[in-house]
Length: 263
Image (cartoon, rainbow, N blue to C red; front, side, top):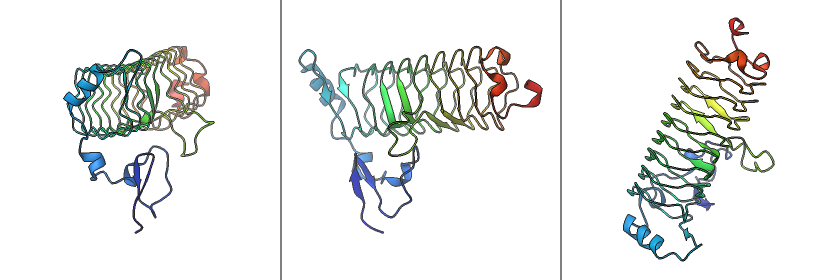
């Protein structure tokens, strides 16, 4: 096999299959220092933030911050684009408006964190604990597969792909085998979102735009879809028993894969 090369902070293994959207974990060496060690400590970051001049930001783009305890910190003035934050603890931290594009944070902890208006394009959060995280108004086009997102808030967030800028594939909100019980997506743009084999028990999808969403195999027991746009949403093999206000949704009759008993 040819030696790996680094592109955009990723260690790419040459000779592997073509890079595909939302499936990059097998394309990097997760055992390398870049994904296992930290270049800074919590104290280093706190001191650097404290020294910032008004209006300035701390640039930690591409930094290795793996395994750190950053819980409860105010990180609103930090740029974390392409940072490596594997197994890092952000519980109850404030990251409102923070740039997390292309960041890697697998199996990390974000319980109760604030990411309102943050940017998460191509962000890798597989297996993360994101319970009660507030993504309101955020741009969420990352991978949340196998993540726990119970009671997370995506109100008015944009989970859709930017179809004019997809050179590396279709980057969108991706939830495979994820737990979204009690999550709120009120008024969210979920155009072409991918939510497969996931649980959305008692989720609130009121007024969400789910056109062309791929929802196969997911469970919608108790989920509220009042006012949601379901045109071409694909529910093939999904559990829609107990779904609330289906006929109060927009274009529910144009959704795909709904059992005939619901139509």
